[in-house]
Amino acid sequence: MLAHYGRRLGLRVDPVTARRAVALAARDHDLESEPGTGPRPFAHRWSAHAGCSPDAADLLWRTVHREVDDTVLWSIVNPEAVPFLDALPTQVQRYVVSNADGRAHAELAQAGLLDLLDGVLDSSAVGIAKPDPRIFRMAAVALGRPLEQCRYVGDTLDGAPRELPFTVLYDPLGIYPDDAARYVRIRKLSQLLDLTH
Image 1: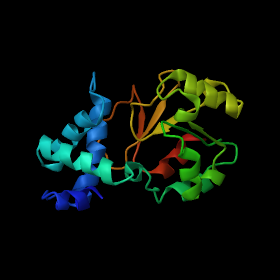
Image 2 (image 1 turned 135 degrees about the vertical axis):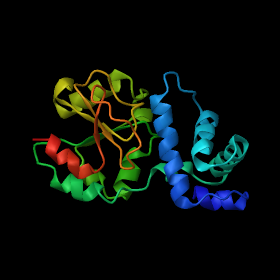
Image 3 (image 1 turned 180 degrees about the horizontal axis):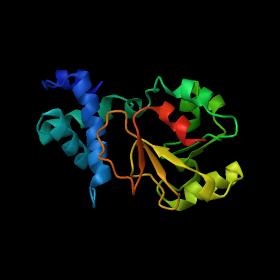
């Protein structure tokens, strides 16, 4: 989608580069000590990895936000998801905590994932967003478990709670540095199966 709109605006960004630039921009945001907020800093980080100017990236992201429901950018189902969820031992509970806009349940249902989960907590429904520890405590209560028995698995670090024993970072592109003190890094969801025993 970004490559399509980029071509319309005269940018030469192929789909693979556009997707990788999104992942790298998110990584940069995670690793900054004081990350900027809002779409403009993200677009600038994206431009550095996509090989275009910050102004061109701003125009592209504004165009996508104006013309497309940009949640589509974050709603592509990973082909590993269903086989992974099916392979999890039954005693492992699966709960999604999402900084979403009230549509997390519907989007997960549409993707065929909702029935594979034990619950979903949408930040807009409760008025608290990750990484606020209260949203994770709410999820733990819903699961009937102490927070210390829960694990955070995410594809970025900015939502990771500091109160949990460890974070699992899903990094399929291998773009994050190793940092055993902060997280366990996996490249495939199936690697989580080794961590659930």
